[in-house]
Image (cartoon, rainbow, N blue to C red; front, side, top):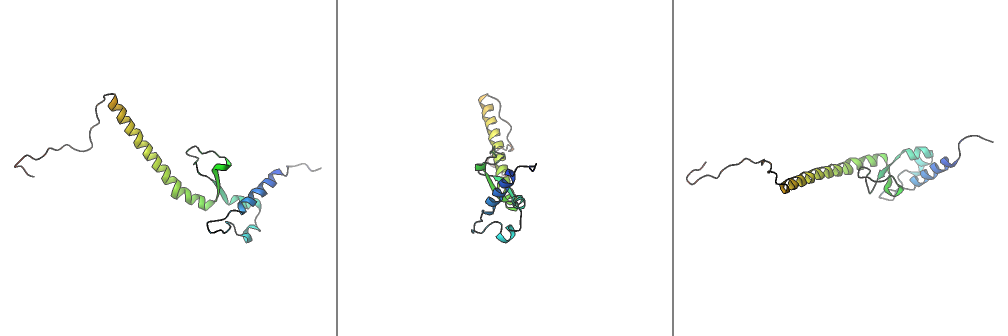
Length: 132
């Protein structure tokens, strides 16, 4: 009798690799060409992918559950993160910050606190006969 690991993790990796091989791009072509895939091990196939948290980003509290994970090739995942996710996250942070400042001004007004000084300088209107 052999002593060692069970065969279950190996089967799981093979099934995972088979599922990843079934993925196709927008044109209907497989992400990994068959000629390349038949020369690769299941671990090599799996190593080409990263899991993207979609539709709920991990930063927004998205769970690491199968319904929220989309396998993407590493380069495509990096491109999506740089071009889509990071700008959206920066926008959300900016809007959240401005909303917090607005709420603080409203609460200060309710408490009767004086208004903060204006950024714009005061200037009086020219009197009749005085033109600049």
